[in-house]
Image (cartoon, rainbow, N blue to C red; front, side, top):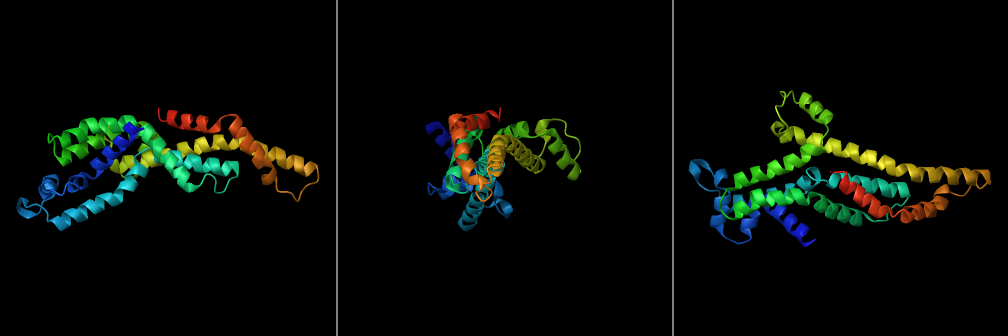
Length: 251
């Protein structure tokens, strides 16, 4: 857990390299990090513009976490599971989001470790600049995303963008990979959710048929089937199976 937390902190530092330097209150470090983004004549950006750029990077960090990691698939599956069980607010949204976040850290740990080795550590040591660090980190996320993306989705967005044929997986730009990756993640999440829904749907059908045959048409089948669905989920150790299956689904 300590390693996952440290790796997550390293990812945040990479996505906002200027903010990491600003915490030390060293304007010279900010100038070095933003040297490639200087004004005309190679002059460094003013401190106000640097802080504005830092805040801009921080605003896109949640979107990057959602769209470039395993978070989307996990949170969608958990939401479908709650609906299949017939529970409206249990577990609450905060619990589902927290569970999805930490399971995403577990799944992304190998990728984040490679990001730390190839981008964050060399950048902290002054061996590479911020542009090279971001490029190296992008290569690691690119490799993770391309493995989880279906070729059909890539071909669809490449055709929409009228892009030429790609010579290799590394040649796929992020502008095409990102929507294709999200589309593939949603499709996979709905496939897993469909398989989760089936056993609970059978229980609902059986309970509704029994109540109908007994003439208890005024009683809601959901009230009767809910304890049986919870009992089934607990007996098969559903949470452990689900978490293990979700983690294994990323290969």
